Length: 78
Length: 137
Image 1 (cartoon, chains in turn blue, green):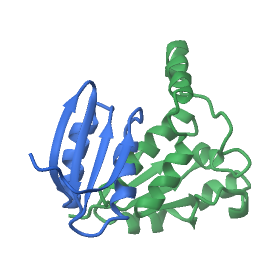
Image 2 (cartoon, one colour; image 1 turned 30 degrees about the horizontal axis):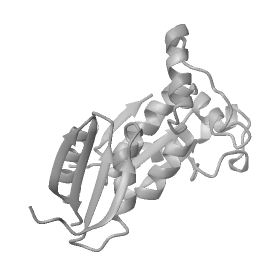
Image 3 (cartoon, helix red, strand yellow; image 1 turned 30 degrees about the vertical axis):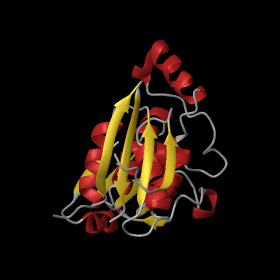
Image 4 (cartoon, one colour; image 1 turned 180 degrees about the horizontal axis):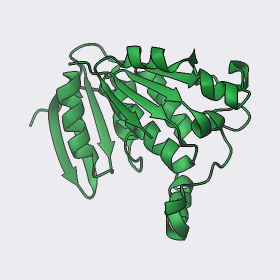
């Protein structure tokens, strides 16, 4: 698998709802259209939250996985 | 569809203020405008000299609820005021003090934390809410 060119990594581990999507919102604003942000969260609600956030904001979900209680999201700025 | 969420924030305990802050921040992250009208005990909690104080919890919290809330705070959960500050940074969040509550509590806008954008009456609140949802907390 080709590695993604991630511009910004945000570690939202240990933060509870709604801080992971707030951090993502703050972070993605610093990117140009088309650039990628990676967010890692431990809040189990973040899976549905990031899905909703992606659909609502139009920032596309490029990659998503979960391992060892960590949820990872890669999104592309609209 | 009018996507604005309007919240009448009446309660002044930390748990209810936290719930309102979470709902506000989530909406702000989704790009939905949020308008908050502060009344009575919520308004009191936004006083500049008290915003960081302990405002207690709703009666139904009980001993176990208080312990859970204290543990969350100790684990680094941000305060409702900090959550609202971040929400205002990322989105369109307007916080207004109810002019009638200001009068009852003998407050001036200069007594309030800078999170509060202004003072308005209930008619302005309804007009600004438009056809959007109104929550009461």
